[in-house]
Length: 166
Image 1: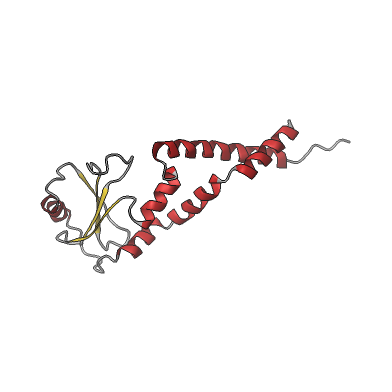
Image 2: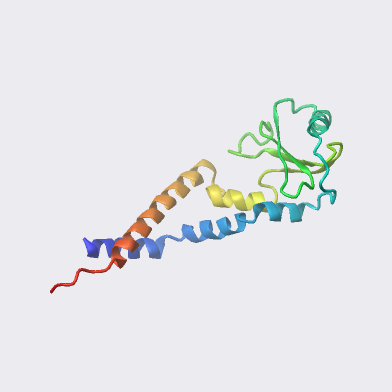
């Protein structure tokens, strides 16, 4: 059993290349909020109370064709009001590609507009989540996770202290 376990561990460790991509992109995503704010060149206003009603009205006025619900968020340092619109008709072929909009703190001005996956941090997220291969990539990632667990367990089993005779 120990010999088989070592062979499984050696095989998976040698040929399991996807884990490097997942580990690297996951390491970058730890800093997702900071990278996203640094790239966006958003407003320098801070510490004002957020005006959610005005932000929502600005979105409804600026995007009259997007009448479904918006998801309004708050940023860590409160430099802006991020908003997401999930029901994009022009990106319906993508598994996940909402419209991302950043508004000023008073909610009156749109500071930035991007589609998910079209800017660095979200592209890295898509690589991490699906290897840029949609649903097929997500399934592959699932198998990579299962293989990584087998690699970990087989490594622990091969590493365990041996029983001494006598």
